[in-house]
Image (cartoon, rainbow, N blue to C red; front, top):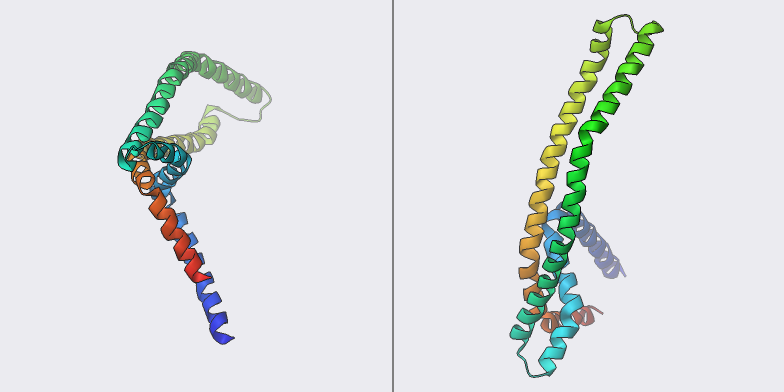
Length: 185
């Protein structure tokens, strides 16, 4: 009874540590998760080609190449639309800023007339700390956006390679995984 309880406690501790590790390493593991997902989805196509006398490695290469070629074509079909929308946004952005600036000036003038704010120095004293926080937040967003772009590039480059390896050995992986599960029960 005590050894079964100890095994369950040990299993729960191991599971908790595994979940914590995955949480910390999630960004590194994303290409592997995508690779496993792609391999899972494309395995029936590779199995079909394998049944038609094509070696698994060659079938995997063909299917992975076609899959990512389709993804690339879709990207190039969508990219021009997104770039046009981004261009239009950047063209309209100064107008939005000018409108916002006019509204802020109107509010400041209104508050000055109502004597809520005493002078321009009071306005500056109230706005400057908020402005510095805004600039700091903006710079943080730029850095995090740069890291996000790096992560996306990493995913784009690593996922096809991981997918190929998982898909090539998918049947062996499943057999080993099933034997691992069946030996524990």
